Length: 178
Image (cartoon, rainbow, N blue to C red; front, side, top):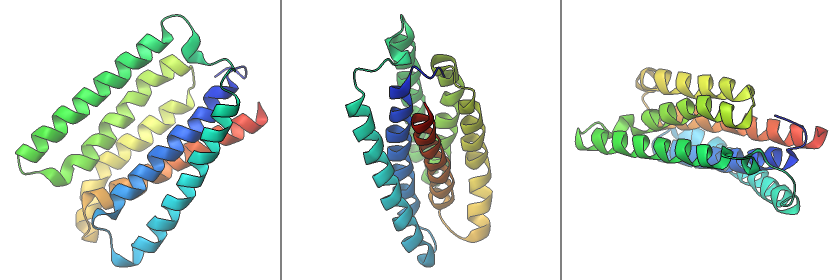
């Protein structure tokens, strides 16, 4: 991503921080009891990072963004709505098939997959790393959850929340260095 897109780095901090919070929240479905405190602390820290990102985004609202480029915002919306539709359709099917414990890994898989397309929009190769991390978490979490005796959402939420949190911090560092 080009340094002139400082607002995008601030938005990374806000958006990845927010979705880190969401995944840590989902992890609370059925983790081990002694994990709850740590997941709660992680949620609080993710919220603070998100709010910092929101503040930085608002104070740099007039700065350039890659989404201002011709057709880029339209492509972003196509990727977003396609992801949302596929994730929702899969979740609906899993719930109807009485396999709701697989909804969190499914959503993580779709979210991870959409970062491959977002790399083309934001011209940020680090999104490939996030894509691979999210997909790996989605694939491994059902096995690991069963082995640990917790809901799939506990492992998926902790793994996805941590990955997104790291990228929120990366966005903040890139903002500060821009």
